[in-house]
Length: 233
Ligand SMILES: CC(C)NC(=O)n1c(-c2ccccc2)cc2c1CN(S(=O)(=O)c1cccs1)CC2
Image 1 (cartoon, helix red, strand yellow):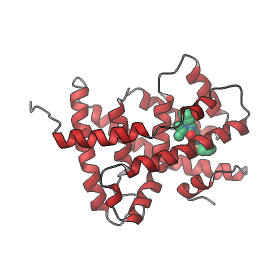
Image 2 (cartoon, protein in one colour):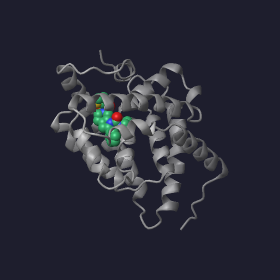
Image 3 (cartoon, protein in one colour):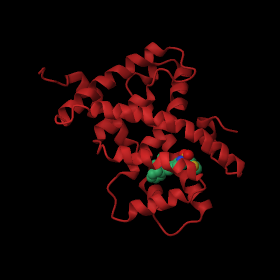
Image 4 (cartoon, protein in one colour):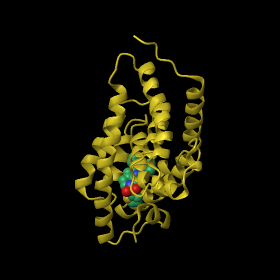
């Protein structure tokens, strides 16, 4: 059985990505607000708008710290950010949702999200995803690398130089694969399960587009940043 070894430069790459991931966290006070006293549907929606807007800012800062990203063609940088924004939001949501919270908090959080004006039909796939991420008990290195891998997806719409994006994504996939083998020796399928979550994420893109349409119907307002990153209005 070949001994899997993470090289010095892979160690360095992982360190940069994990530090960037941890440096750019959503302000806890915003997440805490969701757990505080009873909110109306309208206020829950506004809170999610605030959290999602803050997360997009965090996403942009994290992405700028991915080695090589800023050397990509500028239009491609925008195409990758817009193409991955919703997936990164769902991935971050799943990580926030499956974080160990004082007992009862997860249920309160779920309640607030369910009462925020999002149509019932999107709740099941959304919460199924949160739970499927939670079951993986991902380490923060895995969370950071998986988010970077999702952002560096070469076949997003309008990406011109896909090879350049592949050249950035492949080293991330290599180090994540080795990390999974080293951290989960008794679960050889773990890396494949992580990548399977990325496939599940893509289906959530579709649900999100439908959510947006239904919100627009009942005249829900979003922030300029969300409108820009989601291409609405
Ligand atoms: C952590 C942040 C990024 N999560 C977040 O904002 N959530 C969370 C969520 C999940 C777990 C814990 C805490 C929060 C659920 C939902 C959203 C946002 N979206 S949205 O972006 O479509 C939206 C924006 C405005 C109105 S609806 C709807 C669903």
